[in-house]
View 1 (cartoon, helix red, strand yellow):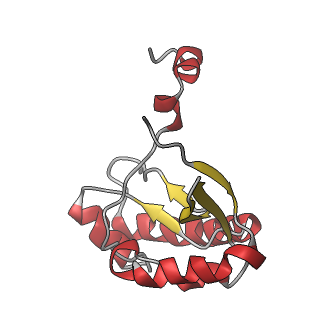
View 2: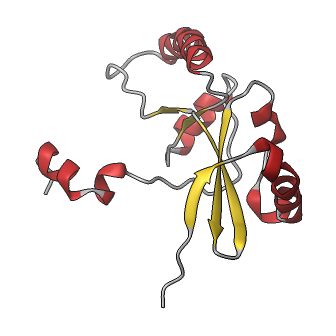
View 3: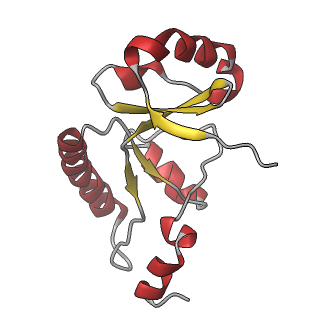
Length: 146
């Protein structure tokens, strides 16, 4: 028989101690960053079964920069200025959304090196993506990707 696990919103009054216990017990594997609580940027979900709480999943809204597409042959100095100007807008937009981070994924080391010159930091954890359209056939059909 398959075990049923449900999810509900976190209850600060009843879940706090257990949440903290779980976070710190698993800190070697969960990469928890306590700064996410500084500006009310987190929604926590509580997972439970008939035996009680089995886990917590903190979720933050973040900005994901999909790519950078420059005009071919654009000088590096112009790309740098465009990136700096964009970052001002990105930070402003992130502030409106109460998003604590922006991410940019690239496999190009030259691009990564370029970004680190302007405040971007290399992530030291695997980054995974969950394309919602892959979970729902109706979305794929509507987009014509089936």
